[in-house]
Image 1 (cartoon, helix red, strand yellow):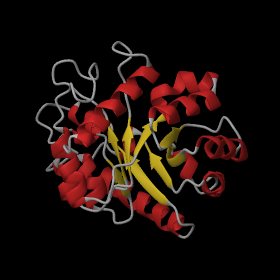
Image 2 (image 1 turned 90 degrees about the vertical axis):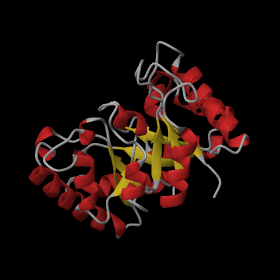
Image 3 (image 1 turned 180 degrees about the vertical axis):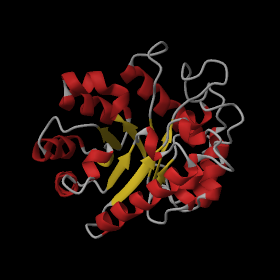
Image 4 (image 1 turned 30 degrees about the vertical axis):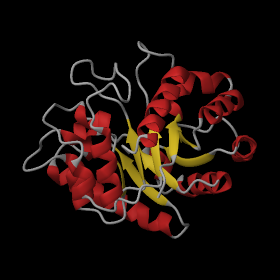
Length: 256
C-alpha cells in the first residue's frame, strides 16, 4: 500500500484562521492528499465539504475533546463529519483524573470502547492521540499501553515525537508492534534528543525507515499525518512543506 500523506491543520492554525480556502489550496499544492482537522467548527459542514471538493483534499480525521463524544453531543459530531466524509474522531487530550492511575486508565479504556461501539454503528471510529504523559511509567507499565491493552475497539494514533518527549528511554517503535492492527492513522512529528521539537523530519533523531517498517509490518495505516511544531526554524506553512519534501525524498530513495 502506498504512503498517503496528510497534514494536521493545527500546524497551520493561524493561517487557516485567516484564510481556510487559501490555506487548503497551499497544502494541496505542496502535494498533501489529506488534512486532519482539530477543535471546534468554524464553518458549516457544507462549507467545509465545498472547500475539500474544490481542492481535492480528503478529511482523514478530526481531533475533538471528550465533550464532542458525550451522549448529548455525539450525534451532532457524527452528523457533521458524515457530511464532510470523515470517519475518524480522535481524542487528543483527556483530564488528569482519566489517566492518573492504572485503575483510571482501565476505566477510561472501557469508556472509550463503549463510545467506539456506538460509533461503529454509524461506520465511524474513535481514536486516541498521545502526548507525553501516556509514556510516563505508572505501576507496571505506561498509560498508553493500559489504554490499548484494556480496549478492543479504540484505534491508536501514535504521535512518535510526543512519545519520545517523555524521555530518551521511550521506545517509539515498540507500540506499533505491541498493539498490532490498532492504528488507522499515525502522526509523524520530528523530535531531536538535543533540541526537542526544534528540528525537521530527516534532520531529527527518529529512525524514519525503521518507524515506517514497523507501521507497514504490524499496522494497516491509511494516512501518515505530519504535525510540525517548530516556529523557530520555519514558518508553519514552510515547515509542513519541508516535512513533506523530506518524506517524499526518503520515499523516492526507497527508505520508507
